[in-house]
Length: 220
Image (cartoon, rainbow, N blue to C red; front, side):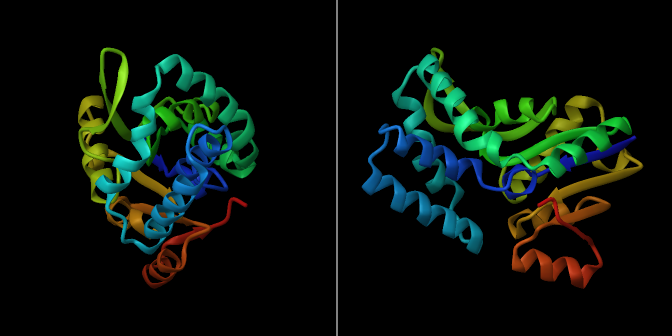
């Protein structure tokens, strides 16, 4: 059996769900435009540059989830899916997922974006396994703090190994292990799989993929 891991943002999606969620909340009037648009862009630029402090970002990104009951958040998320996410799901991304599933591979989406935002997206894509940054909950409400290891950079390796152990597997036990990603932030995990694939990659990942002879593809 093969293991197939898919990054989500700018890989299966032609955009970033973290960024889009904050933009959606601003458009809905939930967040102050003047404050959050600038901060959202600042963190996104840091992510692309490889300088993001994941804990500082999570303080910013998870705080709004703690202010509202789950029922309200889920109502907003339904609108978010229709308005911001379904239009940016790549058809070729859907086809790629279906192809690996048809080969009976063990498939999972692995993303730094939190599980509240990405859970419905994974379901929309038909992927049962999601490794995402988890959020602490108390009494049925989010606290605004992450739970466990954030699923970012080296943290993705930690989360994959934990998940595979729960499944009764190890990374080296598969006939092949794939990871599709667009971002140089995912290099730690890409270096651990046997078949890393750069998908419409950023400049740093493109250069690394060319140097190491990794596959490069486009899902646009």
